[in-house]
Length: 394
Image (cartoon, one colour):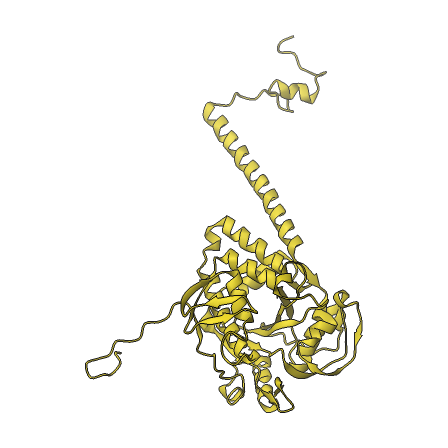
């Protein structure tokens, strides 16, 4: 009967007639309130779906990253960790010829570190130092245990070329060799191979460089005329690998090309508006995470993002580039040996979070090579106009 209580009704039946659990009937929604509620549910749905998409993106990007457990392989016999907020990262460029890298030469079964740099970020995170280690440097390689990539073999200590550490013992042995060489604990490890490097440059849209003379090297697939170029991935890789296309063909000269390119790359990254374009940001993140191998403490999107934020304010002018002080080996002109008194100054500066003093590199074979002025980042600067009396304009 109308007006009687609905004692036998189920909650579902009562809700279907607009009756609350208390037994009171809802007032019909006005058109405006109904529109507000629809909008609220639509917004809530967008948030949920957006969160799901974001979760998928993170899951995919996390899945791109290859990680290696450096700490487990090295154990506790390492330099002391200095908790002052600074950070030291060993960055390696691998010369593997496997897979997509096959066109750069014959795959001999093992990869070596084609490029090695120690990146030091200072305590305030507003300056950085890069120390390039020539791959042909003769070092006392420590005993170490390789990872799965080299069959977990025990590698005995011996006098050898620096880049052999990665070849015989993988990333862990490369890190241990650098720590033995420098006395500086590496907080992280980051590696990129030829194909990954090339994809990353293409995703960024190229890097602008000026060459002051022609560079042609069939081995590195590089053929550039003098002038300003926007280098794509293939050309960029050719530039950082070239030895015979310009200068005396030394690895020390190539390091100076790499350092100039790295500064130009940093300028390009800072100039790309990735945060204003979600697609560009995703494409860059997808490429970068697919291109690198890191230590297991850095093998997630959240951790890489944290490091990227740390580096965000550092521009190319804030980075000091140094080549490990060396001289040519009198027993083999194709090899170099450290100048001990000068390398100590370099690593002491890094350890104590200070700039590397000029005295540490003065007189080193890598301080000034015959190709140091061949390339520059960005466009060539116009020469200042001469005044009537012949003096350069101020």
